[in-house]
Image (cartoon, rainbow, N blue to C red; front, side, top):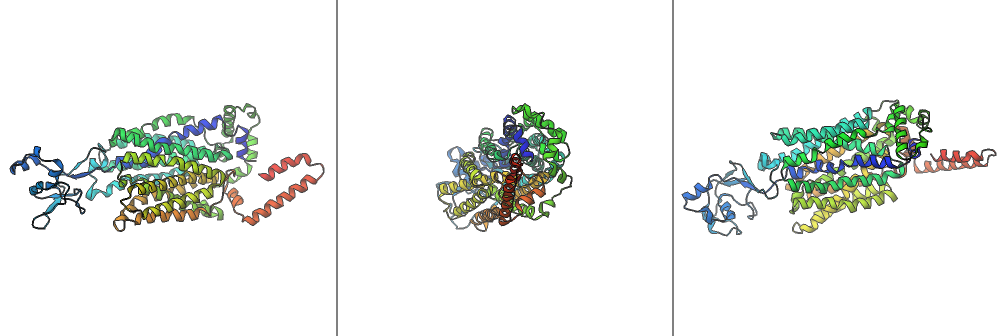
Length: 580
């Protein structure tokens, strides 16, 4: 007997679980906004060097600007890029080339003497096209040309905060509880995320984004554990997948919010301020009863189980579930939980070491490939808001397929399949010519859909593989690898200057390698959550032949018990114990 049986006794997945899971999942609508916000707050519109005193310069050459087309006028001051079709973004002519007004704006620029006129950097700043974005951090602090790396650095800093939060909040929640850290994370994101909109400088912006990233990590880690630890075994797959749709829909919601505001400060407040509402109602959440029991707070756990029983329409169980009953159900787990656990315990024993190493690779590669695709929407050449909606929409059918696979094929097959297929799609996109933009965009959407499904699976899978006594530490540890992947993804995009196909080769290769590692993880379909490290070693530490021998031995022992006179009425109980 274990905690899973207690959950079934108080109503299984009843009214309480529906309400509990829904309220925890609603903030997921805005979690996508936090991770993908840089696509819009740091969007780079078309730009060119600012031309000062154009009117006075033109008047000295007896030219009326009213009679000159804007595109032609810019050719006088701004050189074209290497392709000859677009204006250069980072230089301008030292002297205006008025003779270029005689040519057509669509024809390549040529010079009589065959030499290029002298150019200079944009000494007076830049002029930006305000059609797509009214204001971004790029236009506010001129993060273009020599300062262009600072745009990607802001996302790396944010992911650094998420990484730090995974390390800090993972261990703290195992010590102080899931609810306390979740409530605090809501408050931290609401306040510091909103303060980001007031940033007077780029440094202040990055500082607030780092702290907001820490809060995001605290929300994700503790929300997953608080949901999983109140859900019966057989409901975990459906609930885990369906709640991930909140994040998916949130991607489409982000496109709508960003399109309606188009100012990075307003957008920042719009996606962070609502967390104050989540902070206020999160005080209603119930702490994990599993965690309370394992931290010798059984009376509080029993009180919560009584409330859950009443909410689920099982008031008769209130008198049956006592401190003694709960402790007898979880006697072994309580004894094991008296030990002090650290991150070293994740790799100390054989099975835990295998699980942790495989999950490290899976988490890193999933995040690495996902953000490599999702954080550079402008490269597709389509409307960025439309691309965000498309990228969100394709997740729905992909996750429905993943739900079916998780339910009928198991976690391991689903995890490996999603990673391998996404890797193959990314590789396939390398060989598509750049002028076939529709095909490239379609393949990118499919690759992103499968990496998103991989995320859905790995969150559920990790929570089921790690035992309760160290689950949050394990989630924090593996999430750390995920954040390293998300931090590395933008840097890999620089490799396209060496070889255009290189980023795709790296992203696709990482996904394929992770798919192979996923094949070595234990299957957890319909398996009760482990509560101790000993549970993990016993469940998955034996070879297939040893497991078959153990099952045969138990079957023979049960048969002998049934054939013994006077114990027929106890055989059902024996069978139940053997099954557990």
